Image 1 (cartoon, rainbow, N blue to C red):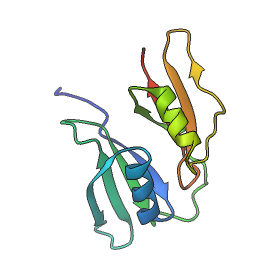
Image 2: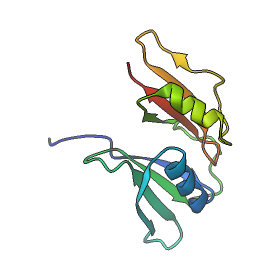
Image 3: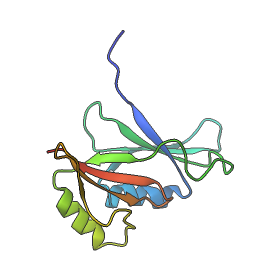
Length: 128
């Protein structure tokens, strides 16, 4: 049956350059690949942290302007080592926060949500 894993999560974006800058500067990802789809219309970019076999983030520009602003994917979560430091960093930036405080789950996991450039929900998540 082979090895299975999640390969990537795709997010539709309005402006590829703005989104790449956001995900590299705010989230800390690096651009791994960027190209125009074989259909000549859609532009794709793949980002990640550079780890072997990691799940990547795919940004998609030009897919369709008729799709709803809010899709089936609720959020993309990124693991962080210090959720409090990240919360403070983003609070002091121009990033729009969704949460006004960090949530701690019964098992000790901690997280908060903020908006990406196209209103997508992003979560910084720290496991205990």
